[in-house]
Image (cartoon, rainbow, N blue to C red; front, side, top):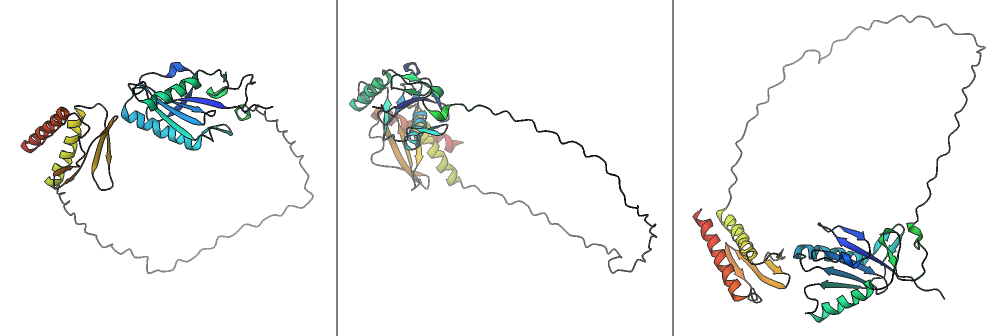
Length: 289
């Protein structure tokens, strides 16, 4: 009976969203890292975030994990994880507090505790007694040395049996130049260039105040949260959220801010008041400048 072989790969998500395969080890799971584990046996991609990993880095790592789930990972002519069906994101800060994250982390630890065999390119297999390498596409093909091309022998000179033809000297023929209507150079008409003054660009003070107020909202919120995620909606409104949930959503028309009813509902009332106070201070400073 032939056993089905499953493979695994571990990735570190670098700054900017680049992923690199790394050796299969629990030592890679550090507080400031996002680690992706591709496991064919459970048909899952696990995305683990350390407790110190920022919001932007988490979002970037999530996009890479979703790509692996949809397309797998190409190694040579083989694709690992082509049948992946699940994406499981684990926040280390919620392990032991949130049942869903705790259960997914336990499943991941079981996978990491399995006995494995190391192959090339950081790939591991969980089938015992596998002879390396298993994936034929990873084998390096031998280099073919080019055969030397023989140099052709120089042809021997052949004696000519024909009588050489003596060419007669050619007498140069003098051609009489004929007149042309283009022989007389007429003075070209001068082209007068007029330099027009560059029109001054008028900037509406209303537009400047609008942009300033939007930035003041973000600045006031950043005094209380280290990581925020800002997105602009199709209707032109702005949504601000942090790792634990949304903070606020607002639109601005004629320099007037309009927050949605659910804005700051999940924020501590003291923090909400401090954000409003800071925003008012920034607006007053702008109007005085």
